[in-house]
Image 1: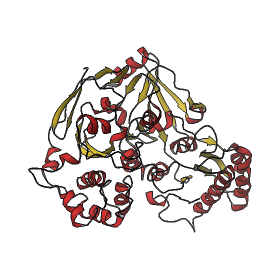
Image 2 (image 1 turned 180 degrees about the vertical axis):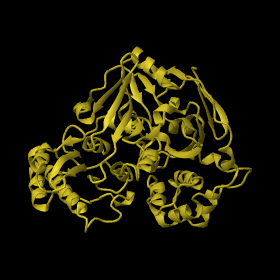
Image 3 (image 1 turned 45 degrees about the horizontal axis):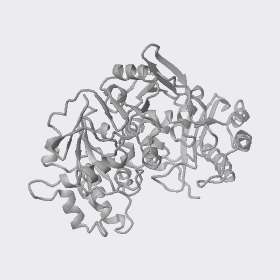
Image 4 (image 1 turned 90 degrees about the horizontal axis):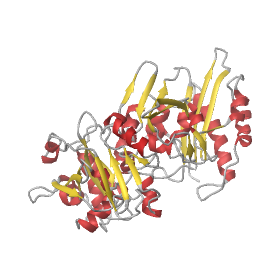
Length: 484
């Protein structure tokens, strides 16, 4: 297939001859002249360009919001997209639009189309049970003049109550498309439907830039232009989104969406479920995945410290070599360098189940609660014997070194074999200064990072005390959040 096939506002579209590095945002505005979708930050932070797509990758079709500025045209292949222009029906406003009017939830109006599309998704979500989910739903939509109270009132009135023609459309058959091999403007984008096709393409084109949600690569393309000419997009391979649980471990597919992982891991793997609450905006979590976060090798990644501290295994696969498994400590070789071979694809993660007596928690420290990159991220894992002596200690950090998930080996050595008490934890916390020499940048100074890294370990110890352990320790909204 050499043409991108999709539906936009229920109209079939075939795209050909347009650069595959053009974003959905610019295609909507500049080609289709659907200018209701607004351009703001162009990096997935503001939510002004929010649109909705129908997701058929799970057991039940559902609507998901996404930032149109980070979706590239080949990723639309086989998708149904709705914009603000497409949610009215038979000349009548959608209930979302009525709610915005009724609650005075718009002032200047620039952000309103994006807000409306996030409310549209909320209308058809039946999993929103907790207060934090209502907040998280709108966390990716910034508004500078209306105020969030009337917007949140709309969420309260609409969430899970959608029962109209758009709810009925979720029962319609999904689009069926062949794998896409699209070339234009000097770029090539291959979007396979199966893992076998992806492995064959990577074997034939080891230089191909692998993307899934493109939430990271998309920002680079928007700000600095494409760094590659050949792309392999894994977004249509259903088997890479699978998650499962067995007696000893959890398995998470490399392209499973972070929004789904967050819910899957809340009670099954709490450190990961805990940190994903504040990982990014809701729209980003609808397309971003663990594979992209880890394979990108960002030193300030939030997920890598969790994988390193919990001794997770990464599964790499190639056409000829089959599946190769590596530990997180072996995966990162240096600054944004990984052990993925040119013909390999990261296909999944194995997370070992923790002993019920093990102590483990994850933390993120940033200037803002949502929509921010960490200044420091940390995950601590400790096992003790019957005498409360530490037998296993893994302390992993983000934002402290050139590699994500860097281990605090001196701090670990200082506590292993010692009684798990405040005095010995203090010795380990002081040892962290020997482990890292962090940089100063616009997010935090080196002094701040060292100080916070030690304080997080001290705080972790306090949380492990049975008589002081907060009942909501692992709730998604309890992630530690400090202001600079």
